[in-house]
Image 1 (cartoon, helix red, strand yellow):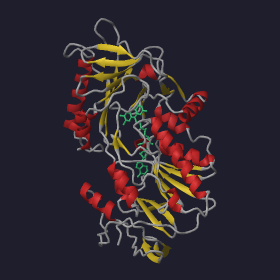
Image 2 (tube, protein in one colour):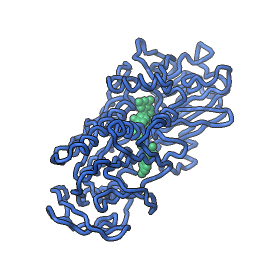
Image 3 (cartoon, protein in one colour):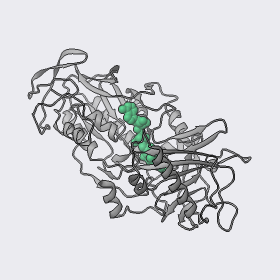
Image 4 (spheres, protein in one colour):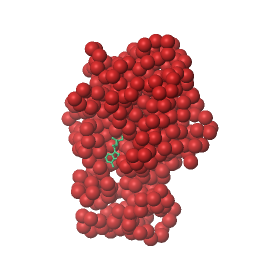
Length: 471
Ligand SMILES: Cc1cc2nc3c(=O)[nH]c(=O)nc-3n(C[C@H](O)[C@H](O)[C@H](O)COP(=O)(O)OP(=O)(O)OC[C@H]3O[C@@H](n4cnc5c(N)ncnc54)[C@H](O)[C@@H]3O)c2cc1C
């Protein structure tokens, strides 16, 4: 008995009987030498880390042996940049897909922008900007530039050392921002697609292999059947989804991923932020050094060119990963005492970084605090994508290659082409399409908010930090 309610008595090369919520069916299946245990398992959902781990590692491998469809439909679970790019590149290869995403306001995941009416205030509250190092990504960014979706960020960016010493990045590689905010970039990507269907908001809670297809559902509500699935998200949610899906190798790789936590404090001020020796801070964005609580600050009003004629100044402050870990709570249920402590700690950190005397940071007229509980990967298998050809399931996401938008985009492209090759090469031994299922993980280097190739102050994560995050 497998936890999803699919009963599978798998024998090598045999036909087996499977029953699930949709009735009893017969599915051809082959047992791979993948399952470490044949013990009977309980069907109940446990949610502790130990329970997730146990279930992930002991589940039986599902193997589809039904012929490959000539017109396959792929489900992408996650409408962050990696999932969206994967859908677009599947379309380029003539493959239909459906993107499921939990986003209430829009697509994009960690490409998040918060708009607060009626002012309106606007903040990118996760990804801030990006640099480009790969030629394939450069081509995509050029196309985004042509459409006006992104533009170069010419504002001054640099390192801000605790106490108000600012060192600009000179020279700096080209830095890019989404013209209207990161979420609007994500929302625009599929506007002309013909073969991609988007279902949002939707939280896929179950994956069931059934009669040669993957059946997806959201809290008991069927969400369609698909020839292959793509997991384009990570963290606790992905681990739960995978723990009884029949994909132990995929689940095992996902479980190896470590993620940091980062607090985002959005704050609007009536006037420009002061700076010792001048009326206004001399930068639009800064990596903060030597402050426990803050690793990044950016003037989003200037970055997003929102207001030409005064109005509130919107700043995004992002915490260090260490501070995120110290103050970690369930992100969907932040105790008010923690929120108050973190907000005060981060505003103190900003004051100290700017070299302002105690109590002299102006009071914000608006604040909003958010915890990114699964913020950035701290380790990686260093492979563009993962694909299990027997289970017809793949993974894309930033963490496979790095911790930034570029890595997520490259991963989405790689998985799309891999899946297209798989479906468009009938008769090939499926085993040839297995990728990334056993790669070892290495620690990732970079800033607490990701990697910015070429930016100059890119640094190694200290051993101490890496250890802290891995615990
Ligand atoms: C605070 C912060 C700052 C950052 N700053 C930068 C930066 O300045 N520059 C940079 O390049 N990168 C930055 N990053 C990293 C960058 O945001 C990510 O690398 C990139 O957005 C990852 O995209 P993704 O598609 O891999 O994952 P995600 O964006 O996480 O997308 C996953 C999506 O899947 C959805 N989902 C999850 N579970 C389900 C489910 N069961 N059913 C349906 N949908 C589901 C989620 O809601 C989400 O929309 C930052 C990240 C954070 C958190």
